[in-house]
Amino acid sequence: GLDLIREIRQRGLPLTVIVMTGHASVDSAVEAMQLGAADYLTKPVDPIQLEMVVLQALEDRTLRDEVDALR
Image (cartoon, rainbow, N blue to C red; front, side, top):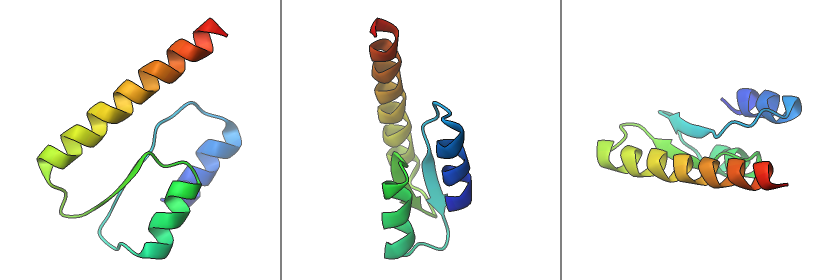
C-alpha cells in the first residue's frame, strides 16, 4: 500500500488515497499520512466511519479540482 502511494505521488496523479489495513502500526500510519493519504483505517472498518471518510475525501477532491480549474 505504501509503495502504491509513492508511485501515485511520483506520477503526479490527482488521486485521493484512503488506506485500509488489517496490519496497522503507528509507523505505517505516520508514513501513509506523510505520503499524502487522506485517511488511514484499520480493519474491520466500521461502515459508517468509512462512509464519512469517503464523503469527506470526495468533498476535498471537488474543492481541489475547483481551485485547480480556477488557476
